[in-house]
Length: 191
Image 1 (spheres, rainbow, N blue to C red):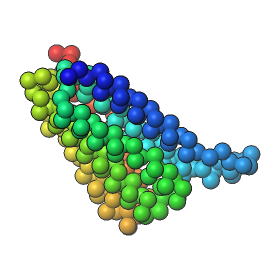
Image 2: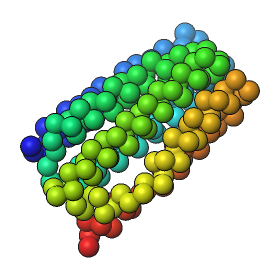
Image 3: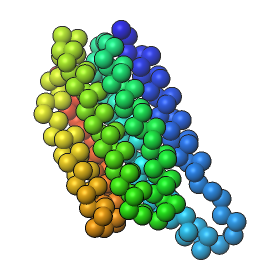
């Protein structure tokens, strides 16, 4: 099956997710810096989620650029990823509105663990079609970055009940780690 419809659908869903997230910002009624300062937790959670979604979109693009065809299993794995990403606006808004309270921060972690796991499943589904996607299988290798991300997320969820700010710092650390471009796929396609 051609991958173009999968790419176009995923791009559209991700664009809608980003739009929903930004619409969570409510315009302050006062015209001063103090009014904006009250929005800081909401902005910080938005920034964290925006970076995460942008990273998924970027890596999704690279994955699909490296493959020739997709099958039914890949379509369902992709929908699984989009499901978890679609929950990010809700947990992002809740975490920001509550000022990083324990339950919203823990639920945010569960959602990003779900998204990270779904992305790993998508990668495995694509790599399992070795005859059609050999370059991707070569490029992915052991996927250390993906595995360590999930481990850090799970640890951060556990730490939520000790320090929500430490948990959020760990979520941010993973986002920053993924800002550093992963050149495995590009290098493999160039050779």
